[in-house]
Image 1 (tube, protein in one colour):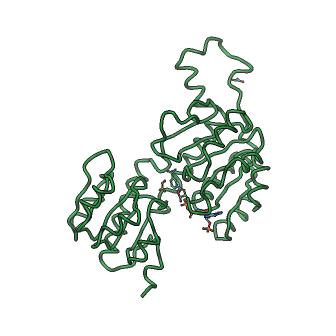
Image 2: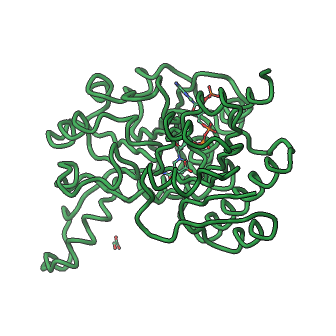
Length: 328
Ligand code: NAP
Ligand code: GLV
Ligand code: GLV
């Protein structure tokens, strides 16, 4: 069967796919436009997509042969799942293998914002370091003994929370359901469940780990930021649109919160004139949560396993739309 892949993937996974199917890989760095995807995928039974591809209702409707969309990410907010399901198209993702790498990156941002690492690096390189040592040079915030608030105690939220043990931190969390992970967080880490409002008011570090959905879009805006401590830090490694960037900018500029670490943005790539980038108390990274060599290789293997299983009429292990198997 024919498969279109919207970007080359690391490792050897795609050659495994080529042994079983006719694989066409987009050859450029710039992602294909909607029309280019339609042109290349119109006869395809499967496509492998990135989170930066807008797999909209119209696009899906223009691909009559499509049986499976295999997303190279755990998040799938870029895909119209309802439309895919309605048309009987299987959607899969790559959960789990990127959990620890994304939790590590989250901690890199926590440490960078609290201890002003990006700012300190600029300070050294720009030649501003002219006095040997200063009692008041680049003072930051303590992480040891601080309180961490996790919004969305899922796989990544829990992995971020687990890393607190060496820092002797209290963990608070907000999540909508009770799961094996929320129970594990309570039992193993002494995490305390509370309302979003209470968490925002009590946490020294607030870290967001919910998926982007209709419920979570703009979840952290002015009202929520106004509940945070003036000394608190906001970390977002989920999706940019969960946070209102304009409101966040105002709060950071006026120092009504201490700082923010952002791996994700409302628009990606974020434009250079995004005001957030003017602020010293912001650490920005270009959506690199899962960007380690071994993680990206494992994601490629899973993306290929998922599409092979689906095209082989087996239920893929990492299925997003379970309903697709339960409709007539
Ligand atoms: P997950 O295991 O599904 O965790 C998400 C958690 O959020 C679940 O506990 C879920 O609870 C909770 N949640 C969902 N909607 C909620 C709501 N409206 N209110 C409160 N809690 C809600 O997913 P994951 O693997 O940890 O990944 C989380 C997200 O991280 C992904 O969706 C993706 O957007 C992002 N991500 C980013 C990077 C990066 O490179 N920066 C890398 C990987 C992932 P329920 O059980 O109630 O649904
Ligand atoms: C990355 O953002 C992912 O959702 O895997
Ligand atoms: C700092 O380097 C110290 O020795 O306290």
